[in-house]
Amino acid sequence: MLKTILSVSGKPGLFKLISNSKNMVIVESIVDNKKTPIHARDKVVSLGDISIYTETDDVPLKTILIAIKNKENGAKASVSTSAKPEELKKYFQEILPDFDKDRVYPTDIKKIINWYNILTQAGLDYEKEEVEAAENTEVEGTEAE
Figure 1 (tube, rainbow, N blue to C red):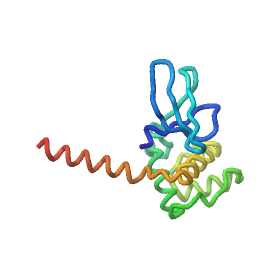
Figure 2: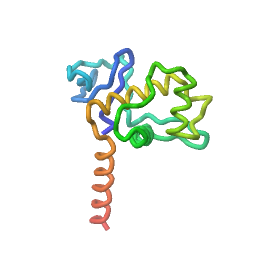
Figure 3: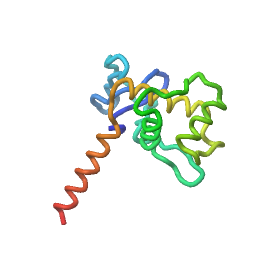
Figure 4: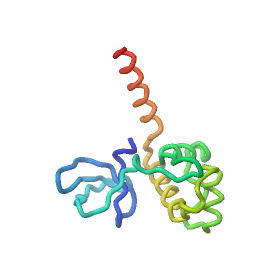
């Protein structure tokens, strides 16, 4: 699910991948459902490809979004994206205790919280779809044996 959710540099919000071609992709805004072409020169990142630095290893964004969802019981994040950097770090410490304080900046934490709020407001259940994909893989693996 998160593989098809995109962040586009210079454009606010998140986008769902609709179709792609050689020189551009067509995306739909999760916030207002407007379709937009994104050209090859634009920087596009899939949320499924993002991970966060920790003291030991990198943690996928999906894991962090699920941790926020569990902490907030599925509601919007209790900390504002306009909070002071110390507040953001304290909040993120509760979500991911061993995050790398030198390489994860307050601006990164703001983005993650903003993305979580957008996904929650849109009602996208990235957690459930990931579980279903894992179950389908297990069933296919069992049949192949």
